View 1: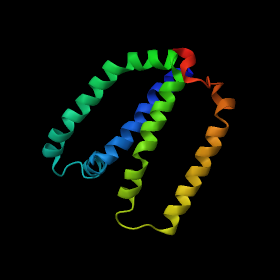
View 2: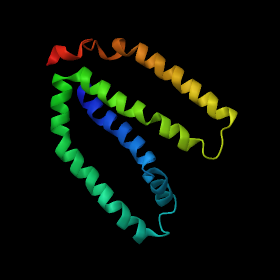
View 3: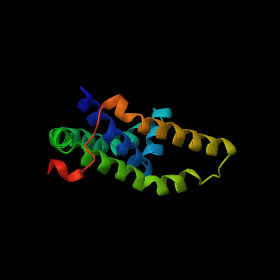
View 4: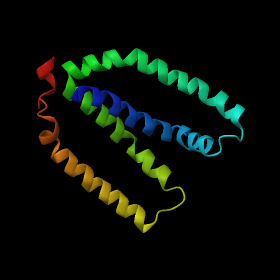
Length: 136
């Protein structure tokens, strides 16, 4: 049960981050907010993106489940590294229009909340092996 939640959660997070970095996120929000304006143009743009997502899920869900079953620590740290690696670009892009005091409060609050979650993760989900190479 726990495994299936991670299979769905982690690719969604990293996919959302990549969509933001690649400029798809803002365009998708604009498309959904103004659904009838430029529908044909936006639909043609997002059709290959959606089909690629579906094909990616079909092709990669079984290998990802295998890797999460046998090499859970390495895969989870790999996802974490992929997400953390995109943070500088996300931080730069999010500050294009300047930053407000509330932005900093949200950043600090999210960091504290995430830290508390990570600190208590063992109690929530069980123990992960400390050594990456134990499963090899």
